[in-house]
Each structure stands twice: as C-alpha cells, then as structure tokens.
Image 1: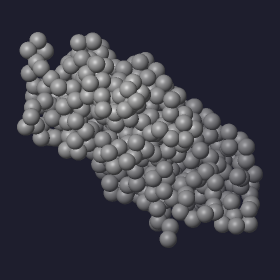
Image 2: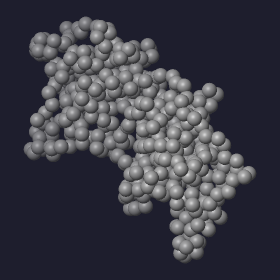
Image 3: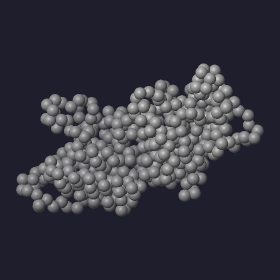
Image 4: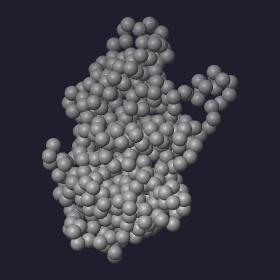
Length: 479
C-alpha cells in the first residue's frame, strides 16, 4: 500500500514554527500558454489550492531561519514547468543572497510533459542554482516524499548535503507506470522504495513527518552553531624518557573485543550525532561510519573505521573509502573540521575489492586528506593495518592512543614474507617501529593519549574525545 500524500501546506505547517511563514511566491502569469493548457492549469489550481506545483518562502524551525521549497503533488502530479522552475531558481538565489540554509521537500512525477523540452531544461537552471548555494557553504537538506521520480529526482532531489525520505515512498528515476507502458511488464517491486534506497546508500535516513522539525534542527545546529565549552578532561602527557613498552602487548590489546571504538566515542562525547549512510552513489559499507557530530562541544564531520563491523567479518572495501571521501567533501563544503578515526585490521583483499578500485580509492583518500581546506585531526585509535589505515592518516594533527599502532601489513603477514612463517611476528613488530610511541619519535604523531590498565571502553573514549576536542579548538583558533 502506498503512503498517503501530504499536501505542501500541511507539511509546511508541520515543519515550520507557527506564525513564521513568509511566502516568496510571485503571481503566475499563464497568458502566453494555449487555451487548453490554461484550462488545465486552472483545474489544477482549484483542485490543489495552490497556484503552481511548488511553494517557496522562509520561516523558522525551532527558532532557526530556513528557506524552503515544497512540492504540491495535487497540482499536475507535482510536475515542474517553466513557471515552477523559475520560482524554484528565484527561491534558491534569494536563500543564497540572504545566507539561509535551504530545505527542499519533493513530491513530483518529474518535468511537465505539457511544456516539453523548455520545462525539461529548467532542471539545469535549478541544479546550477543549488550548486552555487552549496559553493557559498550553505546547507541544503532534501526530503523526498511519495512519489519523487524523473527529472526532479535526477536533479535537485539528489543534490542535498543530507537526504532523507518519508517511509515507503516511491523514489526513482523512471516512473514504474512509464516502464510498464514501454516494456509491457511491471517494474520489479521493492526497488524504488525509500527503505531500499537507504539500504543501498542513496538516502541517508527514512523519517516520519513529525520527526522532521527535530532532524532539521539537529542538522542546522551542527552546520551553524559555534562550539561550546569543553567539558571532558585531558590526560597527562606520557613521559617518553622514562616509559617502557611492549609492542606485541599493545597489538594484542587493540585486538581485544572490548576495546573502545568510534561508536563508543560518538555515544559518550557527542550530544548531537547525525549519521550519513552510503556514498549517495549506490554503495553502502558498514565498516566506515560517517557522521555529523558535536564532539565535546565542537561541531565536526567524523569519519571512523568501525571495529565492530570489521571484527564481525565486514572488512573495509572500496565503497567504504568512497563513503569516507563523501565525509571529507562535506567538511570542505560546509567549512566544518574533519576528524578521522583509524582502527582497522586491514582492507578487504578480494576480486570484488580489486575490481572496485580499492588501490585507487586509498590513493584518492590520501590525496583528499592531504589537501583539505578545513582543520583536520586524525586519530590512531587501535589497529592500523595497511593502506586502509594510511588512507585516513594525513591531517594537520595526528594523535594516537598509547597502544595503537600502524604498519603496512599485519605483523604475522610481515613475518611470513620475511621469514616464511608467522612465528617472528612480535619480533618484526618491534623492528618495524609500528607502535604509537615509535610514531611519536618519528614525528608522525603529535600527541599520545595515555592508557591505563583499568580503563573501561568509556574511560578511553572519554580521553580520546577530550584530546580531539582540544586539538580542534587549537586548530580552529588559529584560522
């Protein structure tokens, strides 16, 4: 059963604060159109209560100013004609000029067939305006309603920094009715459904309408609110001159299932976290977490290798690194600091990974991390094996948990190559200078986070978050 269709005005009333609506819509002049089409437009106005298929304006969401574009499906199936396209472009340009975040809620069958190609090419003008808005470092949030298909989904419906959809919404490029008429058979069921697209990394989340105000407010707080006071306490520095350590013991500690990971840090230290799912290009890999977060009071983008997923057998593939690069791009676009957490037993080694350009994705991550335009902190949190670890390493400041380590191959693999067996793994780990303390002496790591034998995962997560918060504040203050 298809979800019920919510009118544009009802959605606006649900999301915007009461009394905050200011319409930006100018009257539509359809006198140049043919008489039959004008009559069709008149019937659409009467049926929908709207003068066109989109409503635009500004308002507030929980006190935060936003500009909005909302589709009205009851007006000729929400189709975008030339007048609607001009209205959308005007609203985007005004939002950009006024420095407003933009929220778009789509429900459309695509461009208007009654107007043909002139309406069709209007999607280019809308997309160009959206990209100018993004280039101004202003947030663009997209909400896909039932149904969103055709040129709308293939343009401004797919260009958001964050994209969400209503439950069970039909979302896709090709309308299923068109497919059936052209091919004589129905389109496969369950494909063009918001939940399925979320599963495949095209949509970030499925959200009920009554949750929209809270989600929009959370996103905007992460995009635009200043940092708050640091509350977590940093640990004292390690005295390297009087410190002894066992590299193999450190390696064993990081492999323990109870060790703190990026999930623990987000749970403990971020009061607002918005997970992003997938690459937006049809891939989703759970071995990497990408999120907008407020780590100990500092808004940032987090890209972290998830030890839980990897130790459950989901090693990091090329799609995970493409997700990581999405997070890097988002940080640059919205002028947010970037934090990466390195914690991986190694990337996936398989035919699928090779054909998916694993090597190239490692290179592109290194290149992107090396040329970021915002403050960056990388954290060696636990295991740091191979190119997958190196992919997230370059940063303005690299810090490391005391027992973390970095190596081109697992010590067992290095032993197998050098000696033909794995028995010399501990010896080679020491010889190859893989420990965080070695990395500190080499100048790769700026600061070590002390670990204690009685640390709980929460203790270590708190210590790591405190150190990240400190360095983000240091880097941001210097801009």
